[in-house]
Image (cartoon, rainbow, N blue to C red; front, side):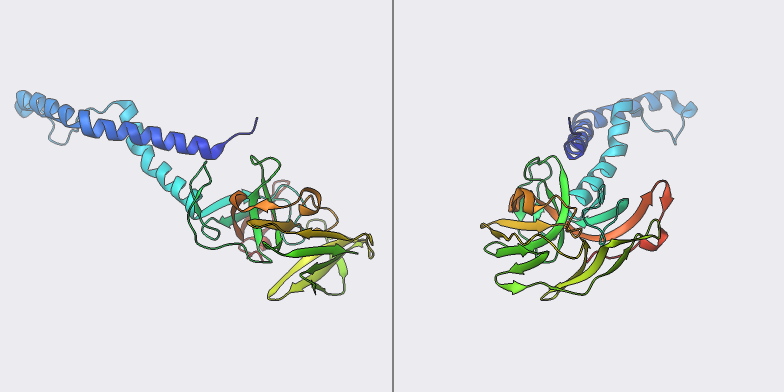
Length: 272
């Protein structure tokens, strides 16, 4: 069973808020009056700086609700942190990267329900996007946007074509693993360019399968691929991402921890 943190956060925030609201509307004033009457009867022996007794449940609700509400708003509508668990986006993102995802980029959505309530934009070709996996929406995936609604995408011999235009790919250089410092002669890093989009990709081997794959992206759907082109479970295997599955645009690496070691040089890197 997958742990649903957004649902838990919404429930706890609502519960603490309702407890605090009910107490403020119906019980707090009465409690304060009784306390004032008691203090008046006590006369000079009373403590002028004392506060009326507040039930423990109400005290916790009053203390935690503002914090929980702030976290809920930030996480649902502005930025949400994610951790990269796999190597499908190497060399752009590494296992152990902690990233920030801009939730504002692709429209404001209600938490848990995921309904878009404000249209603030849509994915652009070349974006690194987080989305709920179409075959299991409880899982979050991260890939690069290759095909927009209506596009015809062709992949042949490790080469991408969109609407008949070629993705330009630079000559490959041996990929140097940033964790081990070692290179694999079969892994090559390339710069891939299409229009204003420029990013790094990883290939295994020099030649690919001559079999041509073609996809026509449906309306309100997107075609995604990993930058680690020969080691990525992406749209080539399972198809398209519906617009309602979009979570946000990955924008920044704020931490990298792998095997209890921090890679300081990756902190603060923009994702492109």
